[in-house]
Image (cartoon, rainbow, N blue to C red; front, side, top):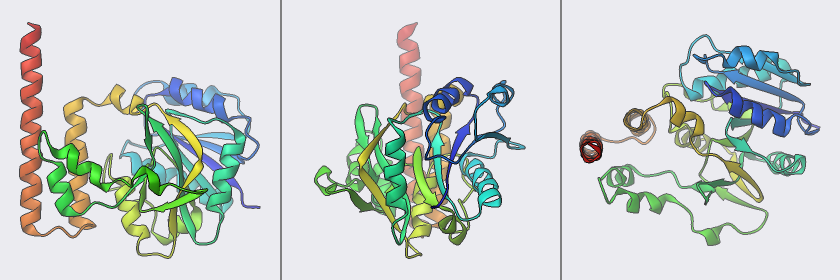
Length: 288
């Protein structure tokens, strides 16, 4: 039977990572747990090193080059140690119900021509399952201040789509997912040219060029305390800027946006950024 390795990405969030480790440490389906500490600036690495957990190891990156970079560090360490293996990648702010849930997800991944698997994710009291790869037109419209959210909703599958044990989708959330090591090698790992965001869309674009399918396991649900780690470390405006830098990278390198579309993307991004600054200024003025 193929081994299962569980990789957690940590950045300045030791307590949340420890909560997840306590959650999974006794799950028998897991053969190894790695925590990739993405060059935390607090004492996370030192505290994580102190933990006495079986089948557990901490890896520290030499610098914080982003989320995808940390994923690759964990992936390459895992493949060096285990060869062909099933891998779970997880944010630290995840809660898993049982060992049986992981077994069920692994069974879905181990089916023929399945490369990527995600559970149903409960996030901000809503279900996050999968979505279509967005077109450049959709990305431009979704950037529009005030009304962009309406267009963003169009990339999601209807609830009625999710029937049976699993459903094929184009993109899944990277807060928690499973992937085969062979698939990772075939797509040349994750593209680490983004610091944060759009890793899902980029990887989905790579997978489209292969024979592998992406599935949501409709029987397994996990909880995501959404952006607990990110919100502790990045301001709202900076998060938006990083998000849109990643969007431009995706559109340029994977979605084949033409010169006019790139201009429209830049214009709509700046419009929304301007409205964000205005809101912050107004709210700050109202408090005085």
